[in-house]
Image (cartoon, rainbow, N blue to C red; front, side, top):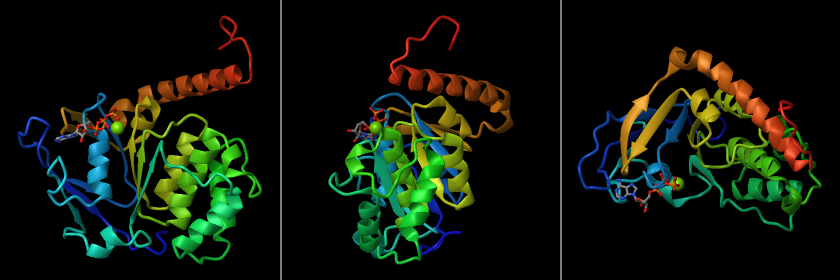
Length: 259
Ligand SMILES: Nc1ncnc2c1ncn2[C@@H]1O[C@H](COP(=O)(O)OP(=O)(O)OP(=O)(O)O)[C@@H](O)[C@H]1O
Ligand SMILES: [Mg+2]
């Protein structure tokens, strides 16, 4: 199900690294349902990479990369009209209007996006509640939501209300959300998602991993089965850490061996 935006495929063509040398990677195609993570040290150009996609760079950004949509230069309306933009970007600085309730926020956003689908706000809330263990109610104030609730709501909002085929998530903290649920629902909705992340579990759940250094893409990995065993182990560690995190939050002392 793709909704109001036609499915699109995006291609990122190489530009230049920070040292001005040409980047050396085969054009990267991003298709519906793809899950991609971007990894690399601080300052290596991860945010710049997704920014290029967000602004449909045409050799006019610091990286000189070019973005093609379905093989062509993207139409002007994608860039100009926020309601037509097929890309939603969520960053740590994505702020919500604090005085509104969750229901009011969703209604307002649905109007801005001109999305008049039946029960769109209820469906968005239901989807958000698949991603978080602490249920969100339409009456909750946006300002009172936990980090996990806010992130869940922003992702559900991008999928159903903005209804964009492509989501860019820049280091949104993954704590407090069900990562497997997010990734499998995005796939089932046929959305492409790119995570800039330091979270090993999210990187390992992605189909492709783009590795950045010095402002350039140095490799594009498809770990596939090679990481299958490690993935199971990392999932266990991730669950353990989440559990410890919750208990620390709840004011517990973590005893030896009880983690
Ligand atoms: N290819 C490039 N050419 C020139 N400048 C670049 C290039 N890539 C990134 N930069 C610049 O380098 C700086 C750091 O890049 P960026 O913010 O994308 O790093 P990052 O990997 O997201 O770092 P962090 O992990 O700290 O968020 C920015 O000022 C960005 O504009
Ligand atoms: Mg960054």
